Amino acid sequence: MTTRTTEDMHTGTWRTFRPVIDAEKCVLCYSCWKFCPDLSMIVREEGDYPSVDLLHCKGCGICANECRPGAITMEREPL
Ligand code: SF4
Ligand code: SF4
Image (cartoon, rainbow, N blue to C red; front, side, top):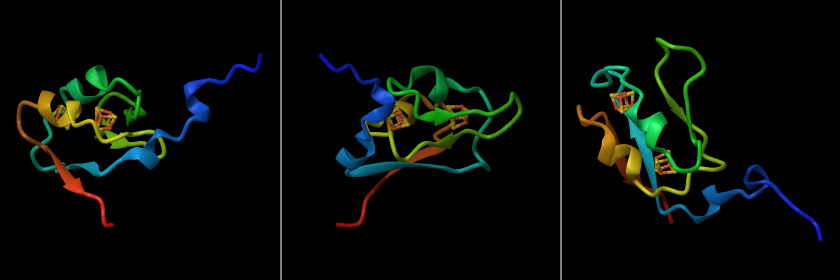
């Protein structure tokens, strides 16, 4: 049996909405990073703004839901 990690699965191809971060509203609390079920919210170093791994982000919107300052908007992908 062949095993694969989820890293090999490009779940970003499922996405119909993508998270867009407004850095002006971001307070660097990293709730988005903590709650993302796919480890698709990337924080390279403490103090950096988060960014999204669009190859794996499936657009579930949990990060936007957990972002208290409302810094993340889910925007529709172009058809
Ligand atoms: S949850 Fe919102 S405010 Fe907190 S780090 Fe993420 S984008 Fe910034
Ligand atoms: S939309 Fe879902 S998968 Fe994408 S970064 Fe946010 S929580 Fe993670």
